[in-house]
Length: 368
Ligand SMILES: *Cc1c(COP(=O)(O)O)cnc(C)c1O
Image (cartoon, rainbow, N blue to C red; front, side, top):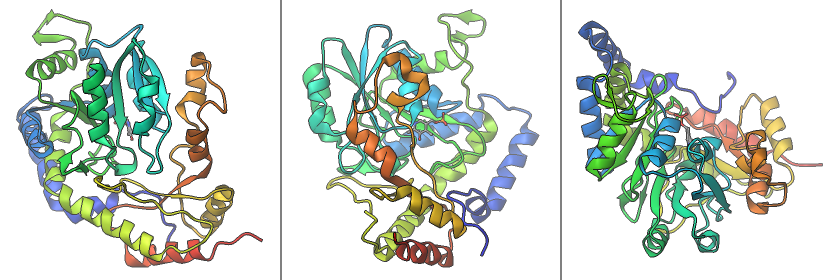
């Protein structure tokens, strides 16, 4: 058997290859490549899917995050609450605006621990950034309650949660703004970089469209210092096809996760679980291996299975954020996640042979 990669995009593409290729040709031949009919249609269809009034296409997930705080007017002197165990881009969305991230530890499901948010709220707190990590929806009822009580903005990082619901409602529709990435390896992946925001607020949607295009609504009339963060016609067109199949994509991932959960049986390995009321679209299948994580990773690698750690260095300990002055021990739960988690291979088009082989290898792992 060939080496099993942690994630691969080619097999998902091949599922509907002809449709993608036809769309690509259609866009190429249209002679219109930036902000056209495909982007407009995608924005409409995506907002409808998430259940918001508006969606605005952008160039990446990071842009969605930093522009979200920008249009909400959050910047210097403001604090934004975010979970410690997230991809560093979530935090960059805050700090690009010169706002200060305030970290909260995760719960056993790797989502923000809603029982630990309130103690971090100060008179400088302006917003909560919820990251629906690994595809699982965070406890949105509690988060919304806190936002209401303290008059805070709510931003959702949905880069890993396309289609995941909490209490039957889709992530990206709870907050003032939902931020999406369509990086190729995400559940709804583009064929290059792409992102979007969702919102019910027409003014925020309008501002987002201004910011993504150099700060102008009318050409050469620049109201604010914006960005070039336009979603292009090619990605928008291809994403419309992905959106058509998102249910299929997510249920395939769910069945891979179910097979792992059923098959993996090793006392050294803790399997992931989903909180009551939450749903996961299984962006990652993350096991936890206290003490022997690195040994298991090496063992799997020797057996031609690639795994990845999401994420080995938590943002508060990364070099980029040394200026925050935080040190090891400040977020012990976050840090133990970084030391113990391991993401198994998961992707569209994974074969049963591949799954069974991985399960067999994990079950045969032991320490002398
Ligand atoms: C991928 C990701 C991002 C960044 O998205 P890009 O499109 O790569 O900029 C942000 N937050 C989380 C949680 C992600 O997984």
